[in-house]
Length: 555
Image (cartoon, rainbow, N blue to C red; front, top):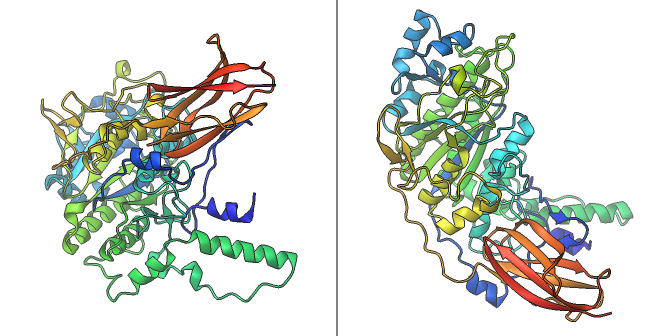
């Protein structure tokens, strides 16, 4: 690869990384500049000032000791040592009651519970997916890519959405995006932001102290082979740092790092959310922020009730950080445009283990917060009797996590039905077509009632989609061809692609591509060197629609 090509393949952000994709040895995918046809087909979403803050609870948060079924005798039986089982324990839960027989874990705090009372906190029970995986790594990938458990894909759900917001030449050409589309307050980005061509997020530990690459004043490298390589690395850094100067400009303003509340420095999540608040206050048009709170792999000494250790301390951090952030955003005047959500790769086993902890499980609750959130408790109480647990003694999910993603994409970011299905990788999904929670759209059932309602109080209207075709298959080049030929096709949105070649009798001779592909122009190499001369037909299938082109092989 030439240096120029290598630099152009880089994503934005000082700590970002790009993941190429390939199938076998004959297929290669890459994005090219827009063609006139593609300009007509593409339907980029309209600008939005909506902000989503994603909080990743790393390690697998124990849901049953987060939202506690305080009157369920099966809970008492399974959690004799680590649960709220005594009468004194039950009394501790009374001020944190939600609906029915459910209560928040007290270390989450009174302010966090008040957000529920004020209608700014939604609790969605029993969220998971079919055939759950209990590996930290694989389960995290499933949540980040929004794939079925048995299907592996290399792009993230949020990366696929953000990819629709920029030109196909991104990140070399950032288009009308003056700020990062997404920011992770971390040393690296999450797989959730991986697009088909580049990472769609910037990773920044402290945006207020960001040192833009072009401001570096290193000494000139020596005129040696090593010096040339050093100069190349410096060039990569400068080329890939698209937004460094923007950070410098935003945080050079007086008062840019002041808050209306005090974030405790000992709370790692609060420190990250404080920086998110700085970015919002500074005027960044970033749409998605990503922060993490680790330590939830509580196999030993879970300490749910203790706000100074174990899960109790983590819940203290979580409730404190979110409630402070919400107050800060409200005081700053941005509350109407900011919401947040939490997720963890899995819940924990219903039964405690022999080390006063819990092992890897399945379903767990998710929190959504913010003024635009329809604060409620959604879904039925978890069923803990043997008849409703799986063969491992785990909870069975009531909601697929992609139902939450679908609701946010549609009702918060205004994504159309067609685009949402593409983002959530419809051909790789076996549960439903569009992850609607009910026949009424994206409504969720309120616990203990027959009422269904949206998670967002005032859902935005979906952006209308063009009725133009969603893809185009070009004539192969060269044609006729002697041995190999290049097949190009354009996608108006990221989609699952099936590219096959048939002979004149209709027999399949080659599956050239069967993969998730990115928006823009892609290409595949078809090798016909072992085939006889004749006419062949290239067939492209995308989202159930097909196009076919004849190809002539001569020898």
